[in-house]
Image (cartoon, rainbow, N blue to C red; front, side, top):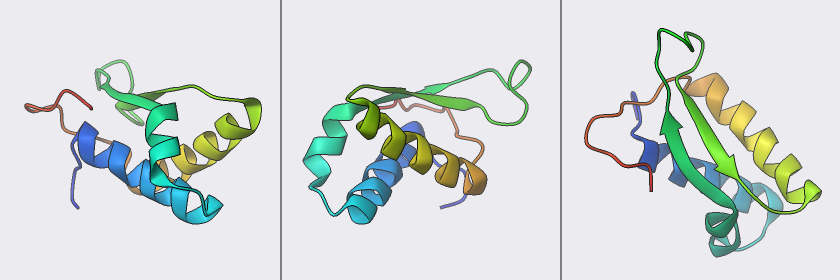
Length: 84
């Protein structure tokens, strides 16, 4: 995957967390919201963010996965992809 779409990036996050936590992907799909594409002019280091929900423990898992995935994919393309 070169520059992922928001949908591809969200799927990657779900897969990473489900694999690391050994829990079903459906659980994480409910907790990881849309990937929002941000302006590169205002966010030059990474142009995306994710809406998350869940308990503090859930958020720790999600935040760790976000940092891991962001290191490999700091940018997403916003062409024709709503993020979900």
